[in-house]
Image (tube, rainbow, N blue to C red):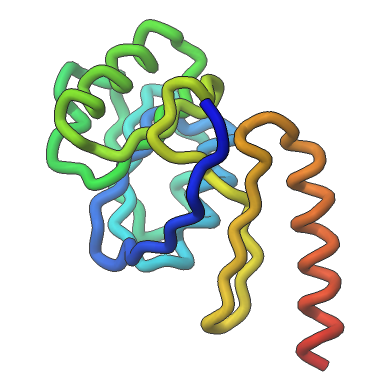
Length: 150
């Protein structure tokens, strides 16, 4: 699939849907909350961490066909390959940005590691190939950020 171009876009007031509410979803929700988007979570298994994040629209049920319509961006964070496939097809057919968390081939964008401070935002990806390296680079940048801001 090759490298992805790092495009920085405004998510302010954009509707973002998460299907699934596991650990990956929780981390990504925490990241996106910084960018002033309207987050909705659909899942039939939602733990208290999601409820405690505040200012999130929570729909406690399974995903239904066409739930992704009217969203700018959809992140499928489920363990159900059939649901993820359905979400992928619906999003592609309707020109909705989609990220299938466990299948880089079915992503119109990669979700990067983010290092942010004030107006500086750095996104890091290894084209979906090496998550541990991305984490190491992000951690080093966070340390460097702290040194630069002293």
